[in-house]
Length: 276
Image (spheres, rainbow, N blue to C red):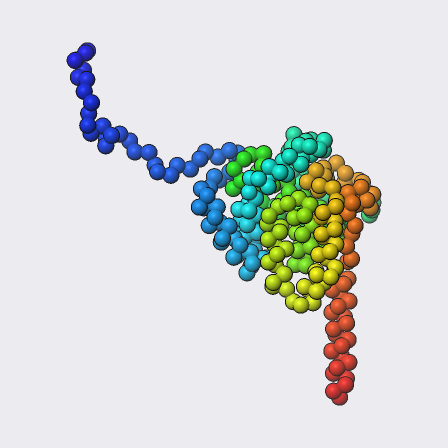
């Protein structure tokens, strides 16, 4: 006994102590971050894969699939690519975002037709999309890796703009192949692998004979698109940029589809005339 206190080992101490939760979610690493357990990531991958296949028009499935497949080794490889390049390092240091407020869209409309900025805004207007449609990353654990994936996500429309490919499914698949071979994001490869299963024979034929070969050649041999600081080259001549990057524009997909449908209508008319 000391100071009126008894010293002995209470056998019930371990039962009376406050119990800690068996599963304690880690603290967020950046604003909006939602840490997930591995089993939750696996379930998200499974659910988003099924949802993306049957409902590719629903953005929530595409977003979840992208983050559930953006594994750390791939993102660290992209990080090394950016750190090994002067412009890539500048992007990581300054952390720019591509939104309708960070870009002056009215100014882009005033640029000459041959500039990257004008072609970008023309593509946005034609396809009816906005830079603000890219949702914030929330499930990637490392803060810088999360930014790298956010940057990839927000630059996607520029890849469409410099190639002229529309957001119809053939155009999306073609851009995904280009992205996968140039940047290495797994979701792009999965999309290129499974999305064609839902296409018509004529669409698969165009991909197989024209757009897959184009995407493979340009994706493999062009410079890393992740290192392009788009905001600083909006006034640059788009053809000059393509030449510097090693990217050749593909055949116009919309015109090709129009010609195909016109040919089918003509064949149908001739067949009907032959039956009269």
